[in-house]
Amino acid sequence: MENKWGWIYLFAAQWILLNVAADSVTPGAIEAFIYTDIAFARHFLTYPEFTFHTLIVSLLFWTGQKKSNKILNIIFISLFIIIVALLIIGVFTR
Image 1 (cartoon, one colour):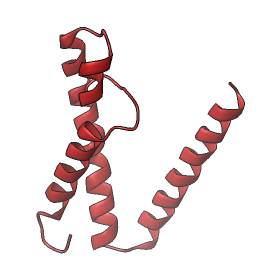
Image 2 (cartoon, rainbow, N blue to C red):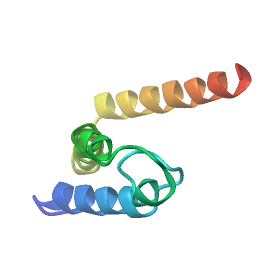
Image 3 (tube, rainbow, N blue to C red):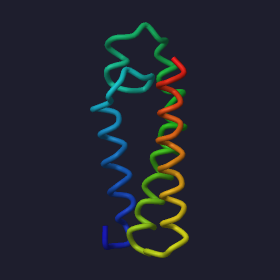
């Protein structure tokens, strides 16, 4: 993570792990090809969004690790709180 290509290594590791070791059967994951009846083309339509999200998370994480400043810490903590709050809301509204 210390070099200038650290974000690419992180992106590749996340992309591979999220495709191979997905925790749910979502379109584009390896398990989805096996266990769902979704059209083959539909699986590949999810890859641009999936790749974009993984790329953004890797860049943000790498930037936060490389340049530790107060603004990035506030952004990361705020995003974490929002994500946890949305998960809790989702669980209790079922």
